[in-house]
Length: 434
Image (cartoon, rainbow, N blue to C red; front, top):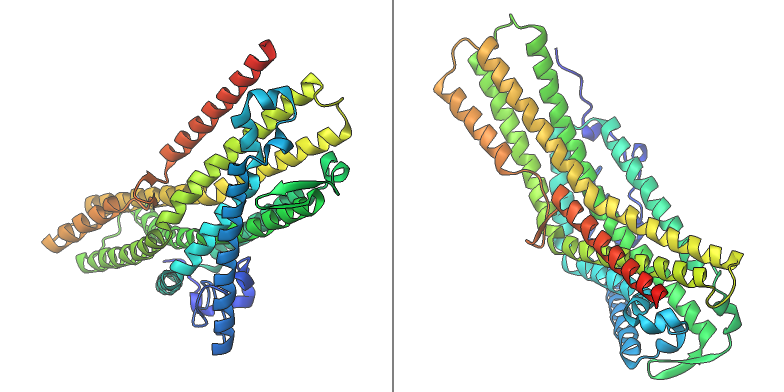
């Protein structure tokens, strides 16, 4: 009568795609060796744990000092010799400054990502345990989990490939022409080539750190999505039985047990969602702000490049300029992919919850009108409690208690980016007319 379900305990780790960046995360997250599916991090010895702790705090100290030093360099105004070269850059210093702050933004994103891992390491362990218990309780099907995690794995490696490719592409003519020339950087004066290599290497490492932690949130969302989809499939199978056999009669005891089971499973799913929400609350707010700022920064860079190249400043159009433009497009694609990982997965989870609620509503309606001849007081109370709990928790992540990650925030971010693009275009056209 009902579909066969493969228990999660029957799935081995070798049959499932590993979470990308697992080797990096084991430095911060305690051992989760008891987990069969959700983030199976092996147990480390006491000495290795001390080494991991020292490495993590050393990384946090380096990122903090590097960010403060970069900010000091901007305050000192040393960037002016590098970016205020053309008439447009001199007339629009704010837009020019945004094109210079790529390394500062990368250090900031990596810094708060590492701080998140240090502060929330215990909560992350609770997330793994809670979702592991949820997956075992719901007996999630293997194909559903494999589909979601495989998609995340490929998304992660595409993101890393694009990011590293954009960073290490040596298509900037200034990188070669001024390689040995010295320039001030904070308190010191160092060769321009060494500074460029340091910045590129630092940004590359920051990308790896930030994208790995972002994939961790997407990983938890994917497992929750698989669990919610399994609940929807169970409800759909029961609804199909009722609709295909309208003459069938269901005892009130059987239906009451079904209601209790659905209520219990929904509470388990809600507990897993609440744990992830509590853990990633403030980081999601920082991710949204950093992502919006990064998109605005790339719009400023691309618009400045188009204007300067079109006006023939500082030289004629060449294959080098086209390569630089392609690098900017790759950066933009990387940030769009980050937005897909952070923003669209919560929307997918919310939509799945809405579909599941609609199916359960239909099940209750069909059962009460056709399959059950007489409803008891217990049936009515259980039905009311179940529908209330489904409507009370909409499975919508809240970023820092400020932003709800639904379709509204997607539209708001899109409008903000469009408004900034309009501002940059207006300033560029105003410069051309002058």
